[in-house]
Length: 252
Image 1 (spheres, helix red, strand yellow):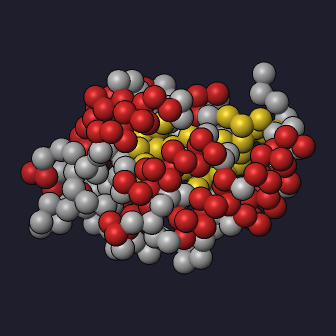
Image 2 (cartoon, one colour):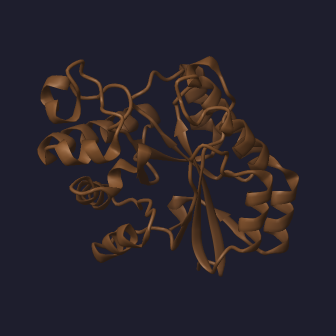
């Protein structure tokens, strides 16, 4: 039975860089992060992967159609890539030009890659740059969530309603952003914990250690601030005082 207030703290972008991956594991072991989502399209460090598999952290799939290259051969998914075989860094543009059959090939390939890497299905699905919230990709995300029987992130009410309509489990509430300023500062973490509504909430977070491989990203050093906020001992004190249960998507 789900308690009145449960919280999934998901750290997006495991595998983006080694520093991000290490930071997420640190936020799990020393903070309040309970879940992460893996980018299978990135080069992954074998030692860090072994650490992830052994960690006990909930691991979902971060479906990626906006960064780097595809898992599938580019020739099989031409509507998803540019002339150099790279994804386009614009979620709306990707959704507008994507052919559903090609997107199905690529998302299916990413799920298969996840299974090879982790030895199991993901705990849930979400997407890089929220590309999966835009049609026709939303319908495709829901199709795969149903097919492999896992929950999916819902960033807003329309996505949540669409998920529930087809029987896909999703949290009741969503909080998170990744703009120019660090979102999960210590102050915001504590404020949101104290104001947590009834039901199951997801905090979308982006903690990490900054490294040179993040220099391209508009959300780079902000990850260090999030890491500090999510590992502040005061956060666990509030969680205990407010009787909030930390959870993963597998608990839905």
